Image (cartoon, rainbow, N blue to C red; front, side, top):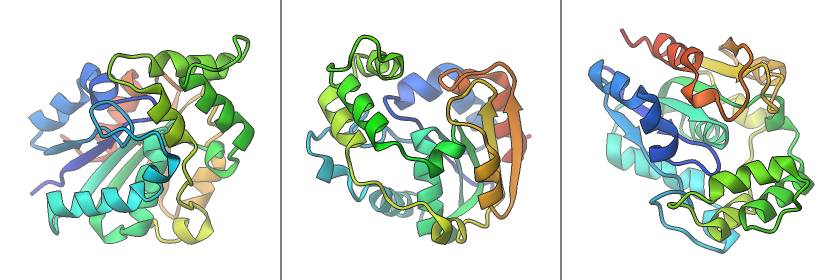
Length: 229
């Protein structure tokens, strides 16, 4: 039986906003893959809390949820941006639960967390960013979607992040496809490719961060790497 596929969206995203419009869920389903797509805590239809501490154990809780859903079955995973980081943390926590992975919209940014920038983004999604802060304003626009809660997203951004360093990367021996646009602020991809034991790379020409999930090159990379025929 083919592995189910877990889809994890990015910060300020949702299943309805990130995955459904691209057709990728239908493509995977039509190929016989069960699609597991969840709104991450604080996003979309998921429970929303305004205390950062409520999100501290998110990755461990998602691993437990996956185990309850899939049992002993191995699951392939696709993550975008924050969802990509979440997927890597989950794979490090429970490597036996995962098969092939695709991570997109991440690269050097995974190794250089800018706390000041994170706080500006948190203020942005809460509606308090400076007009001149284009980066924060971009996230603020996504946070203003009807199914989002700016205060919950700000709390999510301010949570204590699960570690993702050398000990975690040492546990990620799965085949991982890294997909990154040439115009993506998360790049370059090289530090991430060097940290992964079994990595391949797809470059999306003239593609920025937020356009990645709907880029045909990204969708092709997912279907190829997960061996969906």
